[in-house]
Length: 264
Ligand code: BEZ
Image 1: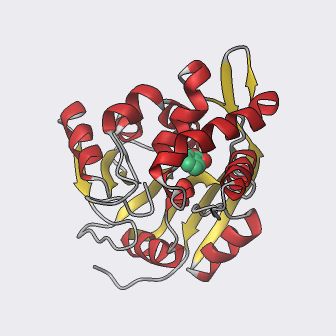
Image 2: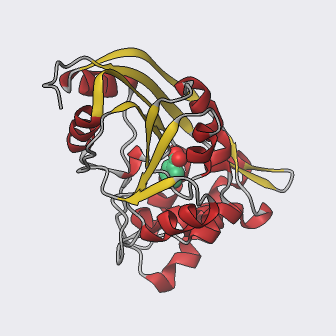
């Protein structure tokens, strides 16, 4: 669920912080599970499963689901919380399973990964012919206000920061899927303003959890000042009634694997 988080990676997260203060990530993901519409007995891979809550939600339908995440701590937490489910640590750019899946599902994970060609190759490889890929990720324009404010605040101190995430448009992602042998059945981009937890501290907390890549060029001892400037800049636009609201935009896709494959 990261720019390939693993041990030592700058994006390694605390599973407790993730569940405790950023639960909206998987709470909103329930809508993507509805889009998946898992059926009893289906084999489903949850790619970038985090702490496993949506994996469990998929399993509730009677599907046989496997959760995969790059982050060892997340996988360990998921396995602790849902001991009856199977979780594996793995790299979304390069994974393989012996048995094919009927569906690959992914929520709020793919925008952390630059190498989308490798991801879609792996997804295609593990799907049975005709299997479906159902995913939600940040779409073009996602958190644009936040990124813009961080860019401006960092620039005032002489640092150049760049959006570290992959937020494609419908056209870009649909073309990529087609180039990898998928038939795109559904693709949509929509605004989903997302209330952050933690009240007044919500934006700082979000940047603390997710913003390491974005704030990378800013030295640690200047980050609090940059975040304070960002808050000042965005307060009018994104803060109301004690709550920060991030300018999320989601890209949702459903695609069918259209390649013919040798029998395994
Ligand atoms: C998102 O889910 O859109 C997202 C989360 C963290 C950082 C950037 C985007």
